[in-house]
Amino acid sequence: MYLLGIDIGTSFIKVSLVEASTQKCITTVSYPDTENAITSHQNGWAEQSPMMWWEQVQAGILKLHKSAKLALPSYDSTQIAAIGIAYQMHGLVLVDKNKKVLRDSIIWCDSRAVPYGDKAFDSIGHEKCLSHLLNSPGNFTAAKLAWVKENEPAVYAQIGKVMLPGDFIAMQLTGEITTTSAALSEGIFWDFKNNAISNEVLNYFGFDASIFPAVQEVFSHHGALSSSVANSLSLKAGIPISYKAGDQPNNALSLNVLNPGEVAATAGTSGVIYGVGDTLSYDMQSRVNSFAHVNHTPVENRIGMLLCINGTGILNSWIKKWIGNNFDYNQMNQAAATIAPGSDGLTILPFGNGAERIFNNKIVGAHMLGIDLNKHTAAHIFNAAQEGIAFAFRYGLDIMRENNLQPSVIKAGKANLFLSPVFTNAFVNATGVPVALYNVEGSVGAALGAAKGAGLYKTISDAFADSQPIVTIEPTQTKQYNALYENWKNNLQQILQIK
Image (cartoon, rainbow, N blue to C red; front, side, top):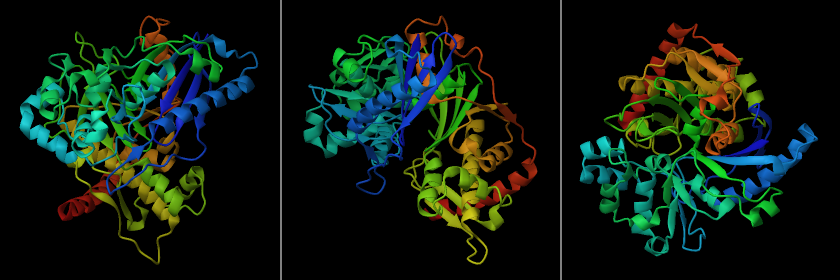
């Protein structure tokens, strides 16, 4: 018996096949071969096509079948028992009453809705928003929908349902539309005290409750694979879609981060530290955001405190594309490792991907400071970028420490920037916290989540009982990196004053 996991990332779609009885991944594929573009019609805007995601999910599943046959000649796709979906958080997907997409998705790093969220925060009331929504409406999905309502009234008038990206892919697979309190919480639609869609948000923005899908638990039946889709993808009709979660809660699930005090991190297109708590806590400035974790219930609070830095891996990708000397990421990592910590005085601030929550939704931009035209090389830029990203994590972790998160260890997948010794060493020593690296994929976590949702495991932890780190890296150079961080932070403060 197999499980299928789908991860709808910003850059790629990943699909994994997992053996249910052993929890072992048979194969993982990504699609397409080159990173997806983000459409930016104006400065600070960011959009992607939901139909592009759907086309890539289908191509990824067909690619998976071929890979699975090579890895396991006895592979039979009719033995897939459940499907799970992880997705990029906060995206706005709009369909009409016939389930046709009305416009491209306004995705997580789009900044256009900041004024709408800020005005809602003031009008609804700071205390009301923070105590009920756990956040300012900020730049999240509700504010993005408000932007559409005001600026694209003809589109808004046609809305049949409002969805998050994972809801949309589940709809394409099944023809059914559901959502979860976790998804609505990341969109800042969810009232935690009343355990319902927020009347204050609906009334303030003038949203009709009918445009929201039925709300179900994360681990539940979100529809069955339709016959037409099953035939086109060489799958069995009726497979349940039994798990949907945003990429960061799903990453935490994949690392078995489920209980209060446990902390996960990712360093992909964006950078995230995600800690679990058991109270309805919030940051007074909404620099750190609180959402329902995958195992949150009205009876047992499990709140994911999420620190997001938009400009992390996307900076590394930008450097690879425009400065990388045709290097791949591994070659960039090797070149960066030839440069001593501190990059010979070159400083890079990575905040060039929209409004950053840690700066109260301010657009800071990416900056390179202290360039010596006679000394600095591409390798210095590779090194300074990775150090700058690590220092951004430290800056954010200090905010989380202000909110009583004190991690003794941070779990992360050995992927993306954590594949780089330079970044990992800078992260560990700048934060002063050991990092345990695991061999995990978000799509594998989604597959295992689907098994729990389909009733194949009694508890969530059963799916990760044998999870062990590949390596744990301890801080050994904290004094040196603290000094480098303070210099980096001083440069940041000067830029913030200018901005």
